[in-house]
Image (cartoon, rainbow, N blue to C red; front, side):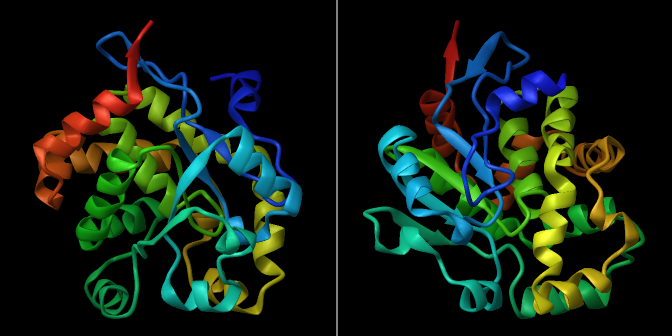
Length: 251
């Protein structure tokens, strides 16, 4: 998809570099995702007072799903939204024992390996995240630190469930490249993230289409479809139906 298409959905905030609307994406059956319902983002703890007003009054965000680990949350906090009337859901995709078990059992040669491992070991929190987004009565945003990796896996699951084509899911993932240098620079300014990034595969610093293509292929190979993966993770059929009703429309 074109840069212009990506810019159209990129929300210009003072404190976020990768806050994007999932609206407008087409599904294979001819529907589209409603605008201003679901957002993906990098760390919201960086937002400014003006950003808070934008999220509250313009975008009408009522639910925030924080995918960061407990240690990340303790280090950086929730940010200015902590004092707003927003429902905050801390759903760490890796935390403590899950992370340690994954590290012991996995061959993590590539970023795609890490994504698939995350999808396997974090099925329960992924299912919880999807459920929160389906049940949210207002617009909702989910985020991690960079808005690329954990957020990218959730986006792939979410868009796959809704019937968005693989090429669109891949393009949504790769759109993080637009501001990736600035995102990485911000992360590397933190000693905690310096140590974490140094231990990861070299392609962690990228958002190449091949990474998401590989993840989607591996999920399909094991589960058949992203919807079947979601069911295996514990997402109820009623929740899947609710998500469709809330997010999809015919144009």
